[in-house]
Length: 228
Ligand code: HEM
Image (cartoon, rainbow, N blue to C red; front, side):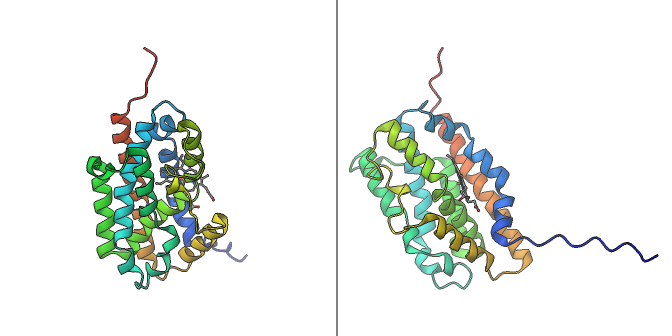
């Protein structure tokens, strides 16, 4: 009797599938975090949204300050797309939400400072790690970000796709679903070996943990008004 065939190797998933699967649990936790849930169900006031938007400004400044320098990098370069840039949109939103002096009053939470510092470190020293942060933020903004926009517009009467929610409006991306497909194709063509791919997956998980830490500090600053 011939030996039973060796168990076949599991099919190797594409890198875009691997990063989605590696961060799926962390995504669920971020999506269901107390702060995001309470902000979006109206339990918190517009101040929570203003504070959250201010924190995003530090995060996107860290992502985008080094983008030009990374544009020629063989690994990170293909991901640098001007149509994703969010800093200018965040500045318009903050001017609307907090007034023209928004910058003078804006401070990063400790968790935001930690998160932004890690992004900058990756941007300066590790293009693969930078991609993990790029993916976590921009693909999220193109997806669940649209839910946040819809709720914010309704809850606080913000102009549809206008000042206050411009961060969520990608004017130069006509077809977000197609854009995400192309982005995933870029992930699948990432020219790094298996060890580096695993390091990037770990950094992706870390990116979600860093986001959650910001939500935790925001939740502490904005306790929901509960009936006494
Ligand atoms: C209100 C909270 C959120 C909702 C409702 C939400 C919802 C979603 C949905 C429906 C998708 C799938 C879209 C698709 O397959 O085309 C998605 C994808 C994604 N989200 Fe979220 N999300 C939320 C929060 C977050 C947060 C806080 C992050 C990270 C900071 C994040 C990062 C991502 C990423 C990276 C993807 C892309 C997954 C992939 O296809 O590779 N999301 N989100």
